[in-house]
Length: 161
Image (cartoon, rainbow, N blue to C red):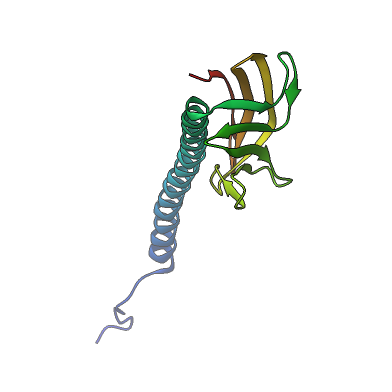
């Protein structure tokens, strides 16, 4: 019989090469997964800012075109951090809370107009005519992405009918 018997199994070199290949494949898969997650976060941040700014704009437009008058700011040229309009003898108060939430209060408690993924800052209402108001604010995403925080400045002018 042969002095050196052929043993079944893998050599140390074969195991090292296979482990190296496995690490490379896992690295490629991990990098792809991280890229997908980063893209998803970026998309979520942009979507939240877009959706909330459109909703706030639509709500303001609807309420102001239904309003009977603008109470605050009271005089043309005046600016205020809140807007009070009268709709069917109810006062609608638009303002920010300390946490950056855009609120609408109809006398029954505040309704938050922005989603939980965004905050609003630099809210200003300026009366530019008897029945016209300019609204401006900055809406930002709470989601931190590689490119920073998604933010958009919104400014529009609305008038009573």
